[in-house]
Image 1 (cartoon, rainbow, N blue to C red):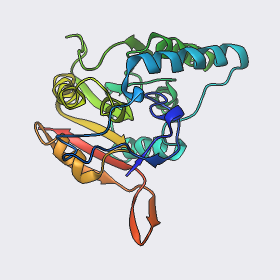
Image 2: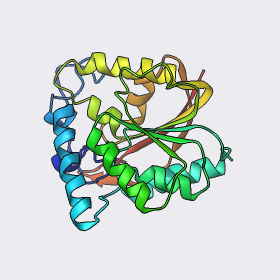
Image 3: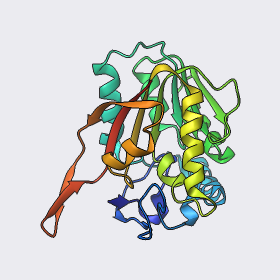
Image 4: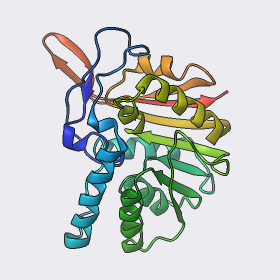
Length: 244
């Protein structure tokens, strides 16, 4: 299983790319032991990251990278078009970071899209980029997804590209935070709503286990494969769940 390079582990929990060995605990299963704790799972780390990226954008106009690469984002956009998700469907980008996905959704004509991130600097950065793009039909909120406000609910589609990965690295009770995440997702996503998740730390089988309560697998999206030492696997896992 691959994990992001330290400098790019969440990038949005949004942009980035890069791979390296995941710091997986070997004392138990992923559901029990999870990954070894890392600063990449802390809010302080990402606040510092986005403060730097906001400064970079203000100084040089650099919007940053796309988490898991542009193809990973396009994979999600193609799925939404293939399944004819209505352009007025409410879409939530969980951990929006620099807002790259929001920008592309808006360009495709989606008109009811929201991006949240627990880092105020991330929301300021994405807001600046969205303004530069001349887009106005996007809602941005500073929000801790593990403790969402009651008005954050009823979404038709929720998208995660790295946020669940970062939560899994939190040094302070990651296993409990993963359960909080699943509970929050259940509250935020509407009945029969779709949840699209891309992960570089978790396999398809592990994600099925993590989201087994209240969700059913709708589709496994094809992702790049790799071979090493006679073994093969996928560099990322991309799944679509539907709320039951």
